[in-house]
Length: 217
Image (cartoon, rainbow, N blue to C red; front, side, top):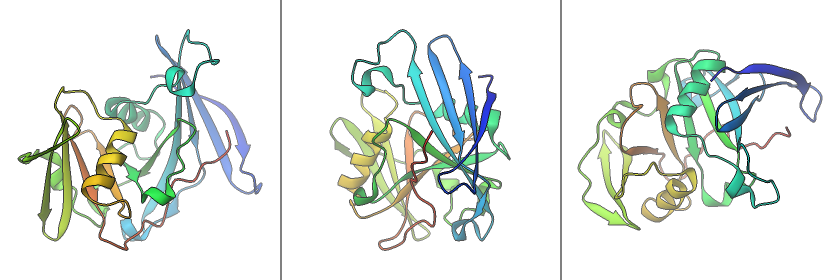
């Protein structure tokens, strides 16, 4: 993907610079919004975290159809490509699966949060690199839930081998872990190509200090 910076704009409050990048591939038209300067997060021991909002339209499909028909959800590999193309540090990012009451992804756009050092995240991401035994099944998805060093990990694998969509993972998190819980998925080259998903689950009543803010395009 070859992204080009399209324009520089300001957020609604007129204080935060927002940079819009676009790319055109054989099948898709991509827009990625760099949602402003990095902010610090206690979940990274005070280090910086940067927010990107991704939108992708299928070429040759009328927008008269419902958005889910002409919008494309980026795959894990495509999210990694975006990170490597326009990211600040180009190393690792995460995707959030919030408490159900906080879900705002109604516009078919997707959010990733980039940070600099893979191991600076307060919860151990190493178990996400290796698939554990899947001893349960729900809605044609095999799953396993493991607590490793006090952290809960949810492993998911579709029975037919397809890559799970964000909405599928959110529903499975709600059903198997709890609607009120938050989970994250690590976007990292060391996991790229895996045929499973690993969600790292926050404890009950633990909440991220960044969230699914929906900035205007």
